[in-house]
Image (cartoon, rainbow, N blue to C red; front, side):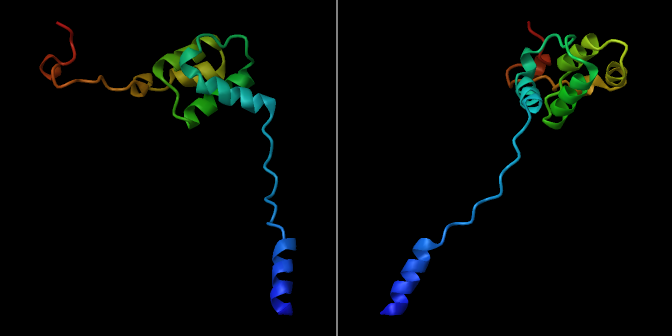
Length: 113
């Protein structure tokens, strides 16, 4: 039947829609994402300019990677900047996780004997 042949040919010649191209991140953006992914290894950012520090901080906060230790790395690395001033005004102790008490240590409040 001619209609079946036409339908099969039409099905073969149709291509799946091509998805729109995704934007390619810049090298700077890739570096920021990678550094924040390794945030627990960062100890000194003083070689960066303040703009890069702000970008790192923004990424760390948006990915919930800002810890008390990392905030202090930022403060020590960017002294006298608005970045350090803003971080000093935060309640950095709120970024610290509560102590993990096990069932064995619950009566000692986590203090080793």
